[in-house]
Length: 262
Image (cartoon, rainbow, N blue to C red):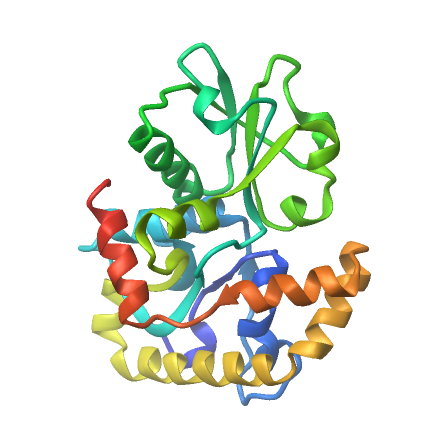
C-alpha cells in the first residue's frame, strides 16, 4: 500500500451518511478517495472478505467479530429515541405478532434485524421471520403480517397507508434501556490498522473533519435530501435532528447491552 489513496473505503448509499462524507463529497479536504458504495449487508461482506479496508459496518457484525476489526473513534450512526429510518410496519399490535405471524426482514441490515428480534423476544414474542428485498410496499409478500424497513425507503414510502401500526426501533430501544443505540460503526480491518497505523490515524482525523464540516452545513444537506427524496423540508429537518454521529460513553453503554444478546 502506497499512501492514503490506496485505502479501500466503503460508503452507504443512504441520506443518513451525507454529513459524515460532506467534506469529501465537496472537495473540502485534501483527500482523493474512490469510495465503494453498498448497502450495510454488502459492506459487511466486503469487509469480512478483506475487499475493503475502512467502512461503515453494521454494529452487529463489528461486535460479533472483535478480533477482525478496530472501531474508529467518535463516529457512528446512532439515535437517542426515534430514528425514523428503521421501522417495523405491522397489520397488528406488536404484542400480537405471535408464532403464527410472519415478519419480512429487509435483507440490508444485520443490526436492525437482530435488534428487532431482541425487542420482540424480550416481550415473549416469537413470530416467523423471513428475509426479502423491500423497496416499496408493492414488494411485500401478500401473506406478510409485518415488515422491517431501513434507510431512505423507510422515510419516503407511505407505510401508514398500507399498515395499521408503524413502530420505530430506535424509540423502542430507548424506552427499554434509556441509552443511545448504534446502528452502524466505522470499522477498520485490524490487519490494515496494525500494518499502516499512520495512514489509519490520519483517516480518523479526516473523517472527523468531514463530519464536523457536514454538521455545520446541515441545512444545505437537508435541502438537497428533501429534493432528492421528494420529502417535506420539515420531515428531513426532523430526521437529521434525531440522528447522532458521535460515539460517547452512552453509545458504548448501549453497545455493551446490545452485545449481551449477540
